[in-house]
Amino acid sequence: MPPAPSPSSESNPEPNEDAGTFHGYPLVPVYRRVTAEQRSEAIRFWLDQGGLKELCVAERRSHGLVYLARDPDGRLAGLSSVGLGRRNADGRTVYDLHVFIAPAHRIPYLVRELTRRTRDLLKADSRQHPASGMRLTADNPKLMRPGIRRYLERHGFQSRGTDQRGVDRWFAPFD
Image (cartoon, rainbow, N blue to C red; front, side):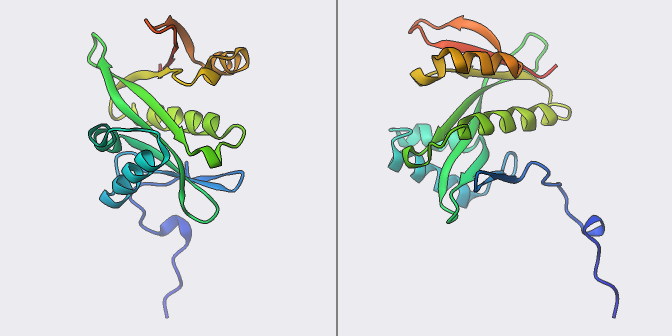
């Protein structure tokens, strides 16, 4: 009988180095390989939890899923997604980041962890699919607190002022 293959010799087309847990919540990267089932689950999640109110917006956003956060029982607890914000003059993409955590699962720092992992995954992906960075609009008033602002600055985000609604805007460059 041949020996069992070692983990390093198994054929895995895309290593899953970003997979892991955060305080018991498995964080699953799905960017560029999201399934129809995961998209449907995300759409139901957004609509059921009040993260989005329009089916067409949820449908569109489901194509840009980056991470799924699951509760310890395997149910969807949160997610991150990106949309194409614009292209720079040099043709590189700028992503618009969206993170939503169900109210029952808003544990300390989960949104920060999803934001960090999403940025890191997209930054690594930008080597193959050129992108210049990721934008974050602080639609949640909690994201405009001084502590969050300091956190974003420490982690490479640059303030881009406020929009017409007075909401903070941030940019995380990939260069």
